[in-house]
Image (cartoon, rainbow, N blue to C red; front, top):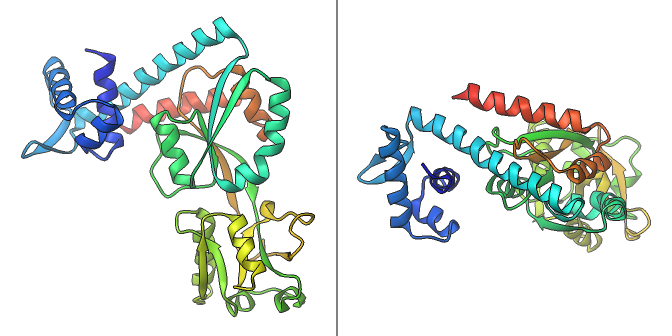
Length: 315
């Protein structure tokens, strides 16, 4: 049994049971991946994957156990390597963060400025994506952690640590009538063309859910990938936007104004997402504590332990 074979199992499940996609991600050949999986199944004495006409379509019941065990083994090996590096190089290395535009633009600058002062020899790498994409980065080992809001995907095998809530505001040009209303309602907002986040952002779903509950079908004039683009088109007069409060800068956003809508739209929780490793470098813990002081070393390790226990119970 080889560590490489376990990695192949994980990559196949990660790629939706597509051998070709797994082989490409692993920078190897599809026949090579198939052969290693067959050797592993032969050694174990049972099939890991369900097949039809030589095509993988899912996991066998025993295969589900294999995936969880393989994930723990691979993560523990990675943890040992991190510990080895920590002992040999100390507070040096890299920290790769998957994050959304809103977090990278409005939350992380302060965090990173503090972190760099404490750890000048740690290289920070930011990888941007929507909430689901950045969780996939963590799952695939492309990022050490992710910072973003809720996702619709199933990442139950990852550790999600709540950090802080995000409330929402209506954003419009300075002279827009909606800013002059004594009391803001969903009906008032729905009377105008709306600029909103893209479909894969949890903020959009929460906004649309609020309108649906009120029996309102808003006119969406533009769906944009991030808050800065939304604000640009608000300034052009293409509509009003519903954005996270943290994305509004009263000093820099001179052409627009914001009005709180926290009572109309459900807030979002920002999470840090990690793989359930048995060892986390001290500077990673310090980075997380700058974001949310409640994320102590003990709290993070407890969450890791609970996540690993729950993973085993699921199968």
